[in-house]
Length: 184
Image 1 (tube, helix red, strand yellow):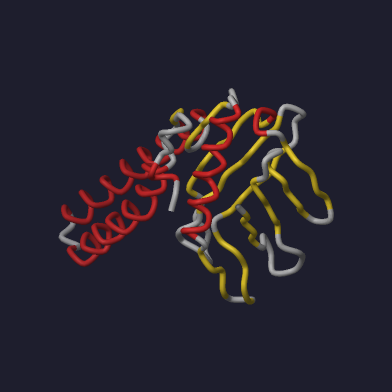
Image 2 (cartoon, one colour):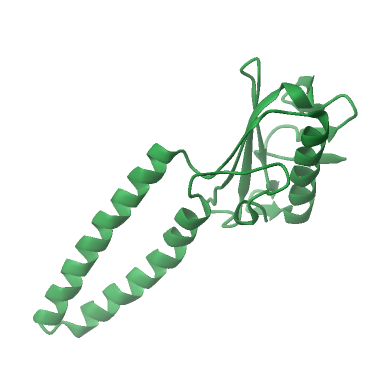
């Protein structure tokens, strides 16, 4: 089972393989094999960017403090980042299955850290209060075009940011219960 992606337009692809020995990786001229039981944590998250609004990320850490990032998209041209949804999902599912069979005790974490998530919720609450105040003022001063703009902006903001926050709520998961919201 293999998976590869290009993290940037310049440079070699990041290559990963699930072997009998463990997770084999090759990144920027470095390579190694991490035993499945030596992987200490996996954090799955949803991380969209401007060029790819549906990008998923896995941060994998080993017991020695090493860290690998695996993304669900790859650079193809200067203006094209291609999704690899199916391959990424299959690779992540197989990685978890092999770790479970090996008896791994890795921490399986989904979403943002609780501290960052709480800050995001607080910021969203402040934006919501400010938008509500502006909407009330626009209606009170009979600026209906402004009120309509605010309603449209609030709907777009809720759709974009709300989806990100909902998918990335902090959670723990199990090897056989991967969070569907954090896989393509």
